[in-house]
Amino acid sequence: MSYNLIIFGYILIGIGVTGILYNYILYNLLLTIWVRFSGKNIKKDKSFKPDITIIISAHNEANLIEKSVESIFKSSYPLEKINVLIGSDGSNDGTYQICQMLADKYGRIKVYDFPRGGKNATLNKLTPLVENDLICFMDADIILQKDTIAKIISNYSDPEVGAVISPMIYSENPTGENAGHKGEKMYQSFESKTKYLESQVFSTVNSLGAFYSVRKELYKLLPNDKICDDYTPLLDVNIAKKRVIYDTNTYVIEFRKKSLKNEIGRRARVTSGGLESIYHARELFSFKHFRTAFFIFSHKLLRYFTPFLLLSIILGSLLNYGNGIIFDYTLYVILVFTGLALLGYIFDKVKLKVPFMQFPTYFIAMNYGLFLAFYLFFTNKSESKW
Image (cartoon, rainbow, N blue to C red; front, side, top):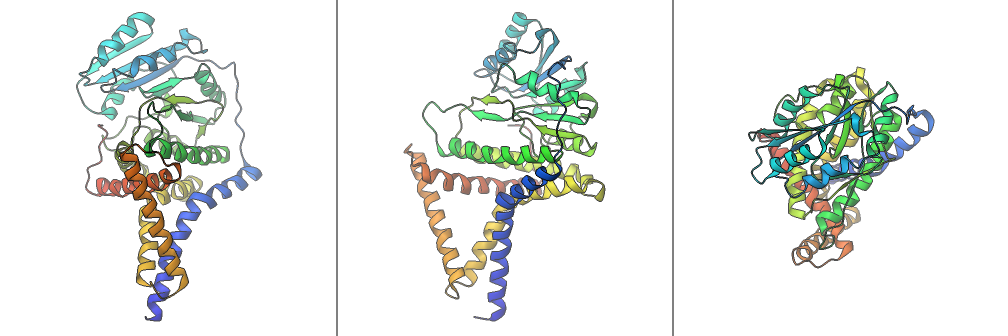
């Protein structure tokens, strides 16, 4: 075995391991130190209660949307200050009729029945209808807590705040936690910490579109049907050098059922849209936006490239198998982890829960979804319809 090949193997493994460790461990540690020495507090005012508009884009959500809209009107926020715009995106399951019934019941809801065009097109039709300064975007499978709106809006008493994201927790699957459900809960728990730390430094660069808000003056129409509808607006806020805050003082509940197959498809769709959004906002990669560019690279791009970092580790180990303990043991760890993931997948299919196997299964599935996202992005097949 040539000396150069051994060195190349070490380099491949080093790149992969360093990239993954930095993204999943060291970056959060760096942010924790950064917050400690130069974090920026938000000047909240609980009495700040301006008029707001909540926008919901829905496609065939008849089984979910009534419960979601009802939670808006159980809010502690003054109901006379809440306006709701709902766009049915070509629904054919009774979604529009249910929303119209809710509009008749509450009187502060306007419902529109649009032909199928995708979420981005629907939002572009609804946002110009907003007449107040703050817009909240809400998914049709979300339940607000009584104080969610009030706590989110209190951030806007600080003029530096341009957008606010609410954390999300997941309702339990009636049949128990499958690998998709359990894995996404674990992943979002980790993600929440990163978004919180970034927003304490100044502004997070990641989205969570279940329930978020933005100042109307900073919101721009979505440029195409490929970008991520909940990510591009937050990058626009960063471009304007305003803060995107992840407010951990409240939360919303998602009650849609999850499965491993659906999570792979969702990860591919959301990530390809995220790549489109980052490319659209590429002006952020300049010295003028150095901090934001650093956050995007550390948080988003390295995460997206995880499957390629894993491939780098695998290739470096295979090229030098039998030529050193590092290469051999690295390959053994990969094989064991992959074996656990495959067994977890089989157990998930037969609805047999083995908790310690659900994480490897989800991790491999998530990275397969990330890999598919690059295919969608480079073949120009990213799509907002789903």
